[in-house]
Length: 165
Image (cartoon, rainbow, N blue to C red; front, side, top):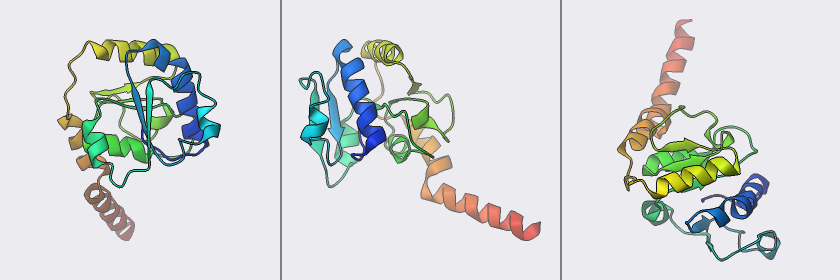
């Protein structure tokens, strides 16, 4: 999990750690300043399967070494940067519907889960699946729709349409 220490991320992680993590054979690494706070840790039923890295200078190494990224976010507004990061790094993603708002639906290696049962079942199924370490299709989607170049072209086309209207 990658994210800053604010309510939607805190709420989602506490839920995930208490309702999903005990029932799957995975460890969770949390990257983001603030999650080492006692007020966060005391909300967790079990800390044995988590590794809190806190702030890191660069996310490159952390994303590259991840097997799967989870995004249990139930609240917020707009598109989530962490979703675009997953696509950019070509990493399999398990996210709630909220975490996928504004992104292309039904992408291979992107799994939508909104209940603890869905997360548990998906994680269990993926444990027995050989996932690619780098998902080329996700990187392609990022480059085509969400990269700076793609956004720049989109804005240029919008401006041309307005000028020609």
